[in-house]
Image 1 (cartoon, rainbow, N blue to C red):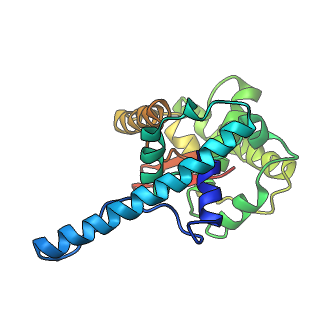
Image 2: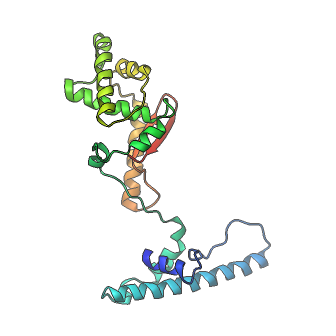
Image 3: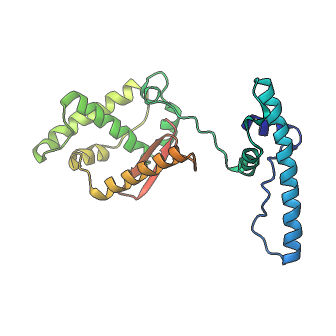
Length: 228
């Protein structure tokens, strides 16, 4: 159906999507509103019929019956074409690979040294710290000072490995050691709710999901998504 709509846009639609058949918010008296509504419905029906012909042609070229997709499905699809989105996500392997990491996204965001991207880099450095020491930095008070240097070394090695010419403030390294991998219940509940919301989007195929890395900053009450 998406291919058929594309054919419609390039042919009958004149570079426009099929008309939805409903009128946008406006002020009008009843007679004018009903007359305009009928115009919209007639045009929507005409557009859906044109898309239906493209669907039948495409199905036939694939060796399938034209009835494989019902007229009702086509009308519903045409009605909602303005809200369709194609989301092309990347795998964690691509995100973590030295060859395919999105350096441009990271570098451009780090033009602001206090953007949410710095938290992403710090979390990656903390993962590296855990791999090396089998614990998180600053879990106990007596470890905080000692772990600052170790975590800074992890940050530097991460930036060097990925060839990132950016600066991470020492304040963030100190703070990540100070809070010692704590998980405040308020932050945990928000992140859990966000994850549940994304799962519902995926299951129901409704609304646009995050693409692809979501960072929440509880200190400033801000969030951001990065295509990494």
